[in-house]
Image (cartoon, rainbow, N blue to C red; front, side, top):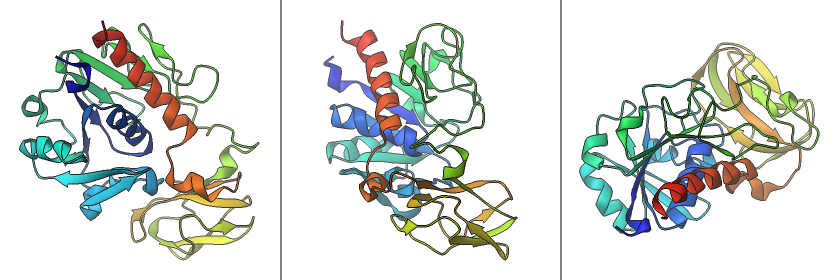
Length: 266
């Protein structure tokens, strides 16, 4: 079997999972993404899971389309799209018959992924142990080891503190000030200033702490709870970053591609 004939299933279709799917698709692999019924992506313009809501989505020039079952995957792939299937428990995995399974849900824990699910099983981020749950783990924490492939042990634990970008960490993240329905006052790609109201939740105003560009916002009308991440502001101020795969995403996706090449490119 040729390398690019290998079928890859990516569990999750948020921004980092989509970066993995995007890179593998552009490298010529047939990729299928799986998601939950009501995904809550923050970086919506670079998340294939938006196809669950809208029927189709585009990430950095690659089109995704929602499919109704595993039987529709081949047609979508042959048409040049990345199929997205609502299948959070991977019930359709036997029908998809993947050579590679990548768990990129970033759930910080293993949701049931096992090494016997495919010839190669890769876990992204914390929650997996290489050699026990998965064959390999790809580091997802910003820093020296971002994107590194681990054949033993686990990725760095989640600290709950966002990585530093242009000198800002937690300040970049927009969190719900109360329980309620999320109502945006800005759009993705808008320039904002520190102190500006960017959303309202349950009658409480949400204001950005820093100047920058709105890089992420959950879909308006979603029910949220206090403290939940609902958006992010990029202090670098470059609007092009809103709709392109991030540096972190590229690094993680590169690690997954390396893992596949280690096993199948022999």
